[in-house]
Image (cartoon, rainbow, N blue to C red; front, side):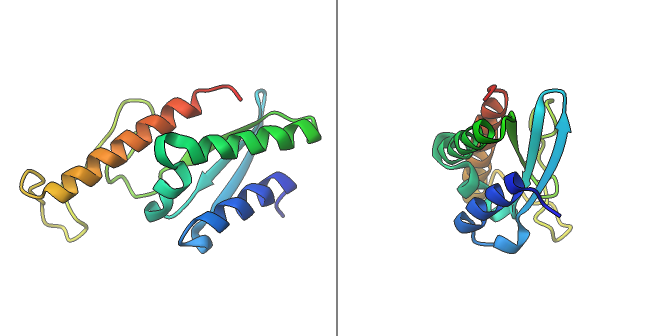
Length: 136
């Protein structure tokens, strides 16, 4: 059974993404308040974060409004679920795998499009990390 805050975030995010069935919102209560962990399809991660983190920040603002109504403090964490490819490794920086899922190494120096996507993904995740540190 999901709570109103989970349903709220789930409804908004499912309206934004291309794979709404992959949206998962988990709820954890701790001493800082309520932590909502949002997991989406890796292809939809950019849509949820938005340019310069604007969409993610807007979600947090809406949660703050909901928290005012419910006398609760909400934090939103967007989880990277792409299986470790160019993923955030929990505070140590960024990691990268050199394969394309086929089991064969990929020479990323020769494929500029993969390099550009990788740089964009890293930049987006870094901005998201900075937004996660904000106290809303």
